[in-house]
Image 1: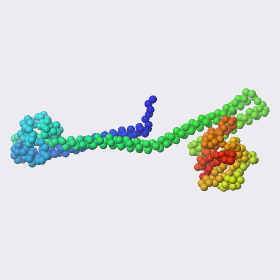
Image 2: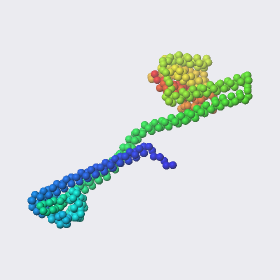
Image 3: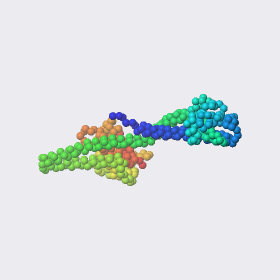
Image 4: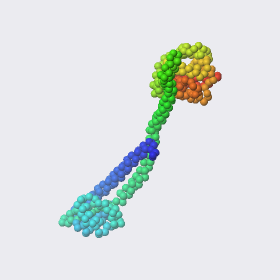
Length: 420
């Protein structure tokens, strides 16, 4: 399969072809316009010469030869002049330097005299070269003549040749410049599109990865739930066995509900639609309420001075409790009690820390601790999904904050920083 041309190259080629068409049409128009203008001026000059000779002949200022001699001597740059009888063969007067042979044959001469136009001729006479000719019939008394005047086209042709040279040199140069300009302009115009496409591709890649990981995580509890229900249908247990089977099914259902809720939070965060209802929250009161959810001795608030105090912050209380709850649950599941809550005030943020007394995170896990479906020990048989810390990061980002994780004092320290 042929490789498709890049969009930038395609647009640049299209732009260049369009400019080439415009330049060609413009050059052709200018050339033809200049040629027409020069020919018009020559034609006006020839008409003036015909009128001059006709007036002198009809004015009775001498015979044909005397008129031609007078014109030849008195009109500098007049061009060539011939006066021919109507048969087109006999020259009765000519400007000095021209022979006695008619410049035009009889047919062309009569046609030109009758139409009153002009005629371009490449004369065989070396002293004439390319000429433009006009002719008109004249009656002097009982005599009839055809007056033929001409102007050399050397200057016109030289001017047109110079213009052609300039167009042939300037046209390609202008086209190259236009192509380079088009390449730069198209590149600048496509740069935001390229960035958007990159973001779109990254988003699609994350979406595919998210769907694949979510499908994997959902498959396990669904499989377990199906197995337990099939066991109940097949074995028909009673009493304690039935209670155990129903309890296991409820546990898997709860896990599915929790996983679905977590996935919904992350999906909303991906679309920047995670709602945040800010209110003023007392950090100490928030910590106390959170500690009350757990058995005595498992979770505690750091003593005054250890974490820098409490104070108040503006945040969504429900989301903040969810994030801190995930951190505490993670610490209890993978660390060791006591789990401590503390707040550290920075110049532009408040950090809410959750620490434990366990072994801490594996060093290679810290850079990906907040990635979705990332687990420090995925094969330990635990019930975690690897979404807890990802949700913490999503909630912090919805508040305009950040997250962090490290190993300190023999245990793990995880925190989210919310801007003040």
